[in-house]
Image 1 (cartoon, one colour):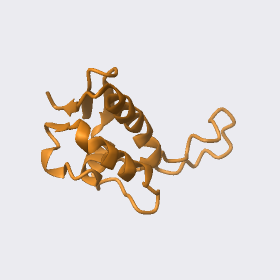
Image 2: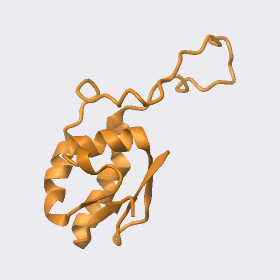
Image 3: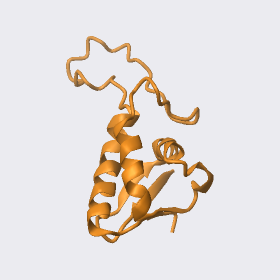
Image 4: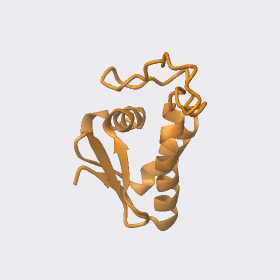
Length: 113
């Protein structure tokens, strides 16, 4: 399942549910996962929180898929980075960019509508 973030300032951002939930919990929006809004006045604080994410501090919810290590180490066709997990900090980057653009345009971000 996925979450679609919308703003009049940017294109829509589609994010898998597990990282979206983790980011919204960090922003204090954990009680409105199904539907919500990030107001312009709250965006500077949200950006500070998201820029401060470290891989050690934040974990995805238990429902998040976990990459299993591959036994095909000899398979030369697989890319070298294929077994590296994507961190929440990396997944937050498009959302950070969306917030920055929405803040500059003075437009809120909504989801679940």
